[in-house]
Amino acid sequence: MYSVYIPVSVLLFTPLRAARNEFFHKLWGKKMKIIETALNGLLLLEPVVFADERGEFCETFNARRFAALIGCEVSFVQDNRSRSRPNVLRGLHYQHAHPQGKLVQVTQGAVWDVAVDLRRASPSFGQWYGVTLSAENRRQLWIPEGFAHGFLALQDGAEFCYKVSDYWHAGDEYCIRWDDPALGIDWPLTQPPVLSDKDRQGLSFAEAPRF
Image (cartoon, rainbow, N blue to C red; front, top):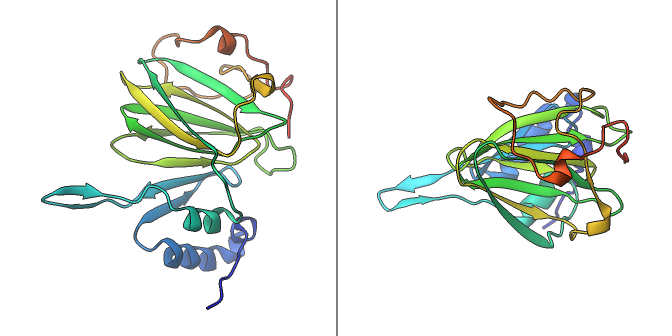
């Protein structure tokens, strides 16, 4: 039996959209719905839930299928979890010399999750994408290396869990201001957010190191 390697960068071209969709349908079958976002390489994943009188089951991660989806092997080295009160805003964070790919999800409550493309060569450079992740919708967001990331807690006790492809390096952590007008992120805020001192002192998009 032979396996076929198809980089996701190739599959994202519009002329190959039908072939790409058929490929991923066969790959993941009925276990995961894959949604492309407007940002290059940023993918939204929706696990398919199997339910009966006993409860429910879904596959949330499969290393072999995930590697085929993004076109390369990813070795997740650390799992992180945070718990936030309503209106807590964390971000926009990233590492530059040790960039991290992140697979993020919410296991309790809900957040509004944001990714910003910092890759100069990307057609979506400088653009942002926001989506609600919740325990109810079970969505996951794959954030490749080269993005800044943050989220706003929408409910009390919002539990945010994520896998990362490199370890945390304290001296390599950067933060871009959540309210930088150059980005114009439309946060769903009804009052000023709760911020850490670090996030309050974030860099502007113009000052932040790019990829």
